[in-house]
Amino acid sequence: MSEVMFASRRAALADVVAIPVTPFAADGSVDTVTHRALLRRLLDAGIGTLTPNGNTGEFYALTPEERRLAAESAVAEAGDRAAVLVGVGHDLPTAIASARHARDLGAGMVMVHQPVHPYASAAGWVDYHRAVAEAVPRLGVVPYIRDARLPGARLAELADHCPNVIGVKYAVPDAVRFAAFARDAGLDRFVWVAGLAEPYAPCYFSAGATGFTSGLVNVAPALSQAMLEALRSGDHPAAMEVWERIRRFEELRAAHGGAHNVTVVKEALASLGLCRRDVRPPSGPLPEEERAEVAAVVAGWPV
Picture 1 (cartoon, rainbow, N blue to C red):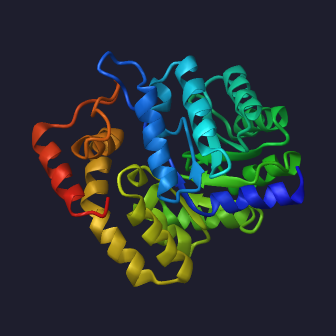
Picture 2 (cartoon, rainbow, N blue to C red; picture 1 turned 180 degrees about the vertical axis):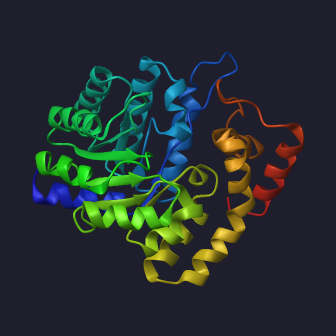
């Protein structure tokens, strides 16, 4: 990987990292036309980093063919307007095949979902990510860390073997742990992305993050961008003004252990006439009374 390529991909992570939804048609299939329209809406709003097959895209509810389709649509729509960070995961052969598919499409980076396994070990975590990173040495690799037990030294060990591990999406809801983990792994060695989106971005930026993921950006890109600009400029009061505007929306997403995380985003898009509200099991529909609340919140936003 050239230094220029390396720098541009790191810069793309130090930004609003959008996690697009995957809209469904009435028959339950992926609505490709609407998906592309939603991607263009993000690009037209100035969003510079797209993550197809993230959790807001219902990664675990998509078939392998649908995951490939989501990546293909994102790369095709992004062109030279945005960086594409393709989500990969599941069993190791599937993750490697998905990473190679992303490479062949022309995507510049892959985000490796936290491995789902009842008996995961820290050494096994390194082995899993090392196999993916070594399979695509010219792609930037971004581990998605949700396991609070993983020590920062293990990430440093991974990067010692794989210099294409350039960033981290850290999604453990503990700002103190994040600060320690980042310093144990190497604060300046990686781009640190606050993986719990706008609600956690202010405190994670204070500890070293320079980018954050967002599902809310599907609905109101201007709010996500306003928070980023405030955080970049060190204007904490301005960042918290945005935080307060989105607070109730994010509370609804986080309720019941995040059961309606994607549902609330799609409900907001549905209230704007941009896509259907449908989600796939094990996610479920939003209670009727909360639908009206979501619509009321969004009505006060710049969309």
